[in-house]
Image 1 (cartoon, each protein chain N blue to C red):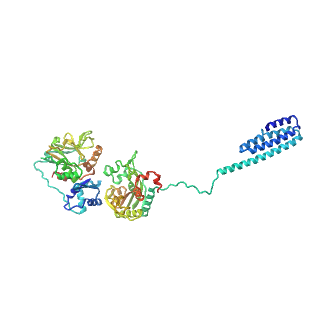
Image 2: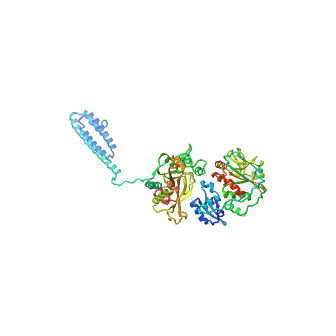
Length: 269
Length: 366
């Protein structure tokens, strides 16, 4: 995975060792740093996180923790306090049903209202670009940003596009079709887990979102999903569709189910 | 001509006995000359035999017939003529025998000349086979480890999934298994596979032997990979396993350092870097100070001063369990090193594919 040196630096008051020295430090104590490259004012570190450490280190926070232990200096992780509306409960906007809790041990949702879709702030865009992602808009970007930061993949739906105001986590029906965000068409089998509203699937769980409930310029209510899916189910679907994404890679290697809440709060903050 | 003469002779003797006595004697003399000439001309035993039969054959021989015809001659003349004829016969037999002996001798001489062998000439050496560089290095490595009390153990090249994966803490659907198994392992039609590493022997050996254990396992392994200068589908691993009550990574460092020093015949430094292999915990990569530049940085070590050498680690408790050992009682280290790699370093070979190329220009150098 590609890491941004400046991003890692942002967790520490103390100046980090130079990129090369930091890479050496990580190589000798944690993970092999395969490549260091200058990217504008930033540096990218391509760190080879092996499968046993993927659940906790496939994220900037994870590597940050690692660095903090190696340098014996305290990191500052920003955990903001979330302003929750007491009147507008999430239940008013959405109902979540998980059909099979083995394949989806945890499903967390936050509803964000009065959203204005616009480009993200420059610094977020810059960090995404350094890490190889294309900035799209403030909602999609923050989901990706939090994934890179915490390792928890997030997904955002347009609340008004979900039929019946429902999210149902279920297995796909045989030959059920979905068009993903990149416009590709996929035919699913009954072993693939999907996120669906009352009528149609809106995302292939843990792998990629669909066009059905995508965020567009008119989106006002954002339903933010932060879920945990079974490793094997995701892997099999990802293999059978031959579709590997940043999210599927993370789910395949396993993620802490407790992380869903931390991540969703971080994103909604 | 002689035959005609004899015929006349014969008839003459029938017709008038006694008168032609001189003629017969003359004929015998002529015959004697004829035969002698013919004998001298002869060059082979076969021809000689034919001439013998022509004159002295039991039935058709000309002289035999003359002798037989003497029956009809009067007693006085028979004595004289018979004596003459018999003398001629004996004379001719001697001649024949002598010629036969000469010819035999001649043939013997000529064959001897043809087939003459100089038994004192030194023999020509048949081209001898010699050991493959991999065998040379393998034997050397075995000797070094044996001197440290390790046994050399082998295992089957055809494995099953249990020993190749599951027993080594690589369960089905585990990402690490996919790294090895997806397209990288050769599966066999009737089930089973050809091993992708020598690690299965760890468990096989633990099952059948009581600790403390000290083994190395040299052997062929197979990977379905695109080949290039440093990748082959078929290469050698040397697996190491040491299990005892208190064996630690410190023991590993000491043994590997000693081994490398013996093998490269110079002082080397090693360092361990954290890594991950499902069958060890913790796992590490072992780097060795570059033997070419002694750690200063050169092209052989990509200017880092270190050369990646092998993967190793402390045997995972699950692997000990699968080997029927109690992980609370026993512990140990394991390592895997590529024999091809060490051989390439030893002989400065740049392409791993040369080993199995069968190229004599390559092989004759060892």
